[in-house]
Image (cartoon, rainbow, N blue to C red; front, side, top):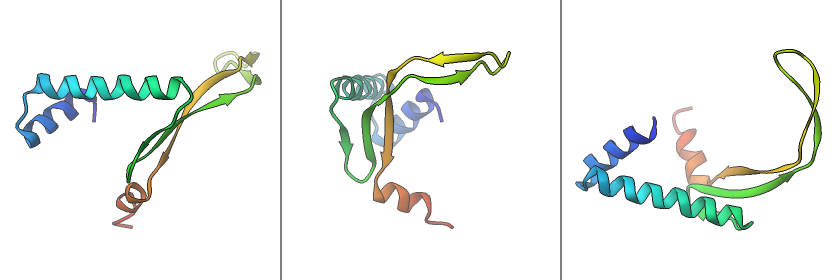
Length: 93
């Protein structure tokens, strides 16, 4: 599912206009990025947690040429699903 499909489904389910749903989703994404960018966690009960993690510089390789390359240090985002999310995901198995 992409963003536009999500917007349509939420608009159908809630009765809101697609423009209103898009505004809420865009605001949610922006606030999540802002929180994680200042080293806070975004915790959504029963869904999961977004947090920033520092990755140290490490050796890598260009997949096309096989040439060794150093991957610079950087922050990345980790998502840990909540218990309800995991339970729903594994319900049918």
